[in-house]
Image 1 (tube, rainbow, N blue to C red):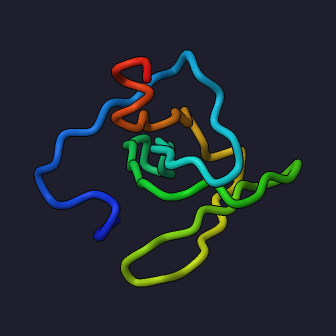
Image 2: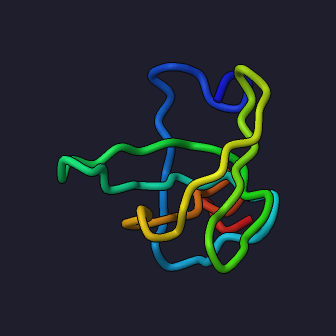
Length: 84
């Protein structure tokens, strides 16, 4: 997610604040083999069958089927983290 987040940068995720469109989110997906994979993106769209994330690097939109999503959590901004 360069330039929004740099490699090694600490991010804070909350399951208690529902993400809105445009918010950065981390999405954890269950794979066919039973393992889990996560990705970070900006929540662009939701439908009954999938969610769409905007990615920065390379710039793209990806679609993730809802049945594969294990969890989706909002990434807090610094202001939200400190209550500003």
